[in-house]
Image (cartoon, rainbow, N blue to C red; front, side):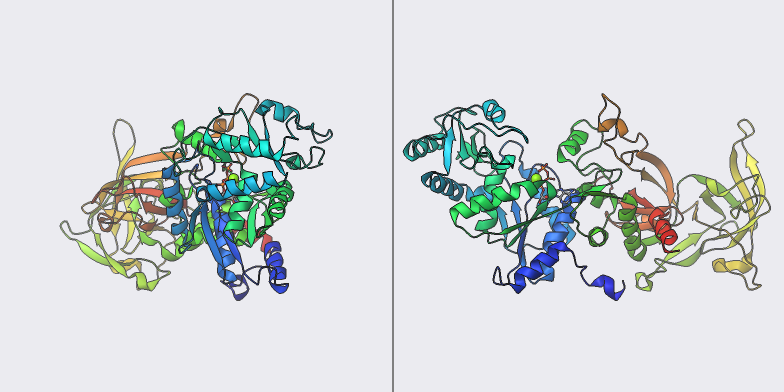
Length: 565
Ligand code: ATP
Ligand code: MG
């Protein structure tokens, strides 16, 4: 990384914070929060928000809270809470002792609501949800005031208390803020603060049968925690006047809401509702399927926290929506894996090669670099024998010009081992399929180099027939085959764009011996093939399963090179 890149890039949020520090708005404090609703697993979009909120706190010597915005009892589950905690930790961020639940503030929120009622700023409305919707008006037409709008404070206090006690059925009444039914901003037309919902909450159980709405709850949560900068996505821009109104009416600590554009990624969907559908309908094996854009899925796919944080830095923050090319994310991943992945040899589609002039029962051991980018990764022994396997694709009987791999009469290098020349092709007499190659080796090319300076263009990966073992390899591709998965014909939905070839299983690839006792989660580069990770779910001791993380071809690097020309 160059010096300029390692300094945090300035952006409009940092400019706002810098100004606030200069004017001593919050006594120079910076306190942010990441507030997920525990109704799904975190995805790469959330990662952007996590990196932003925790990153700002780190850069300014401030704090960042992890807060579960668990105000909706219906869709929330403990499984999601656990996964979110795991994912934020995995990304490398620390909330210290500041893990909070919005549901812990229910009593305080209730008291604030009573305060608003007493101030004549909130009322109980007996209209149905449908009536409320119908009288809300439109962008061009003002709304209509509720017939219950001018109830006395006493009656409102009494009704609100009885709502809490459970005297009324779901949907029969709501508490609304009394603002302005003619406001040009629809969010200000007497928004609902509480609804009746006789539902069990994952933490408060049956204590409550009224639940606060997002707009009412969120600012209070921020205020109670002393958040200074409440960063959210663009769709809340129109809600900011309401955020401010509630806090102003209550005369409580008033954080500043700042909106930024959410992350959209090509070939990816990020709506939790849609991701849940993929899981429920069995299009994927679960929230942690390696094709999912969830952090759990990406971790299982072999993504590293470093790659995701680098990606998040590079995309920055903006005020306008756009879609980021997934090739950039994959580029960040390759850059990181190139530094840390151990190089090994695995043959996906094996073709047998017998080296005729090699002694029958000899085994030689070569020392192979684990990572040429990182000498501290050490070396490993690699065994060579008379019979080996190479990749079927690395041989062509009728080789075109510029074919640098193996062909009859051609010489190539076997990585870390010897030069070999193909002398004979053996075919199945019935099918005509090539079943075996015969080669000779040059004993003077030990380690893959000769004294005479003779050069070969091609280097192949290989495994020793005697030492390799069979292993399952899973080749993952993008889950969707359209850049915008939502781009569908009438009558279809995003599932129409699912890529039918997003997973190809190779049940019996041949892996070099050293991989037998690898550990789940270990990252590898299979030479010439791609980056792989040992699957954390389906691997067993002595029986690893490998997931392809990403191929070697970096389309983003190519784009960058052409742009710099
Ligand atoms: P929904 O509200 O539809 O369930 P959500 O994606 O907004 O989904 P939250 O759990 O409310 O889910 O999100 C937690 C935080 O992550 C919010 O502050 C939200 O702004 C942020 N966030 C969610 N999706 C993205 C995204 N694609 N890019 C950046 N930030 C995001
Ligand atoms: Mg949300």
